[in-house]
Structure formats: C-alpha cells, structure tokens
Length: 103
Image 1: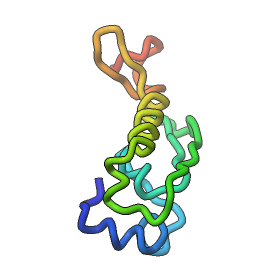
Image 2 (image 1 turned 180 degrees about the vertical axis):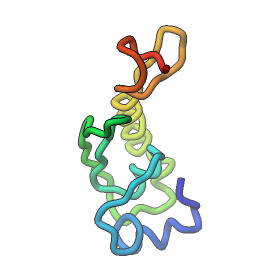
Image 3 (image 1 turned 30 degrees about the horizontal axis):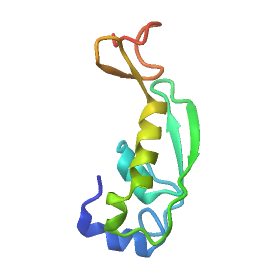
Image 4 (image 1 turned 45 degrees about the vertical axis):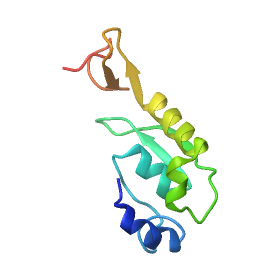
C-alpha cells in the first residue's frame, strides 16, 4: 500500500504516479485508492479476469480509507480474484490444479 504521506502527492495529480496512465500493483486497497479502473489479471499466463470501474470521488484524501464504499470495492475485487477453499484457505483464481488447490 502506498505510504499515507505520499497520498496527497498522488491524489493531486489525479490518480497514480505523476503523469501515469497505467500502473501495476499487487495491493487491492492501493489499486482502489489510486485508480479509476482496475484490471484483474490471472496468474501465468496472465489473462484479464475482469475490468472494474472505481467510482469514488476525486480528489481522494486519506478519509476515503474509512469510507464504506472504499471497503465494498476492496471486498468485491477480493471476491473476483480469490477462490475460497473448503479448508478456509484462499487461492488466486486460475492458479493451481483443476480443483483450485495450489501446487
């Protein structure tokens, strides 16, 4: 996740790193915080699983981290990205064997 001290700099430019149209992150909350659109990718080979519009107001201040809509979007992305296994663990969709278990 981006350091909170960096948040005002990134939101002042309207999104991700200064002047960036595309950014890559492995953090769901960071993606929701910095993006207007999130593209979920599968593991190898990388294919697009889904494209989600992040409909949160700009500029995004640290207060957004406490917003219900922010957390709802993070939860929705997690559900699209992970498969919950019967043993209480989670696996990234498209990873592992046919049953979703990791190798």
